[in-house]
Length: 302
Ligand SMILES: Nc1nc2c(c(=O)[nH]1)N[C@@H](CN(C=O)c1ccc(C(=O)N[C@@H](CCC(=O)O)C(=O)O)cc1)CN2
Image (cartoon, rainbow, N blue to C red; front, side, top):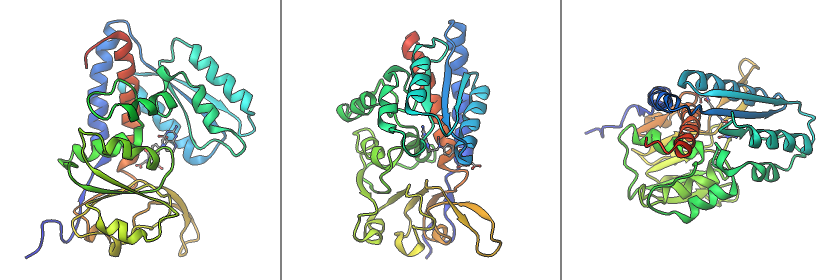
């Protein structure tokens, strides 16, 4: 007899979940506006990396959809550390900007940690300021009244909105970048989620053995096709978060590839497409951070 997942994984539809979240947020923004509180998201983009340009443009169009104002600061790739810091200082002082992000990665030679630490923690829409990461570490249970990193939050919300309960599950996270791998374990291991987390990276001796043990695989390695069907336990939930640019050998043209190889959909019970999975959720949860910060300021209950 075939298990329910055999044949084709069900789709973790990030586009649909993100649209629902944005509609919910639009209602909360209307309440805020009625009380004279206007949320405004700022973005700082340094350089013209095509991926980053696209993601930032997406964040501004999301703001329009949810009724959030947005402020764009675009700097050339040659911007010096001091110029980026000056832009941060202006956003910290701007009352129209209630939250903002610095699009990562920053060009080589820029001290990213110094930039992230300069953001006013109360305006940190990405949840990557040390104060907010520290709050996440300190508050292992109960509500958190500070912003949470958007992609980790998006991964958990995507599964929750598809009825996937993570309590007691073994989750294998692949990748240790700051926006996902290094922070998602903090959220997954909280008492309200109750998962057990295994974080793998380029120094992991036997990646396949770790992935095979997991009921949930979250791959944010940025290494095309690193998660193969043979590595995945039958019925596992798989989230494809990584993005890399590859050249298609057939056409010679560049294209975007995820971490999950073809055929995983024949083994997994649920699979997030890439694009269309975690990416839109990252953007929706960024807006949630902005709205929640404005609600805290206005003391409006969600
Ligand atoms: N300051 C930050 N920088 C970066 C973050 C972050 O959370 N904060 N994460 C990533 C990029 N990212 C957000 O900025 C991001 C990635 C992907 C998407 C997205 O919607 N992707 C679409 C596809 C878009 C396309 O290429 O057509 C999808 O997956 O469907 C949004 C945001 C690194 N930097």
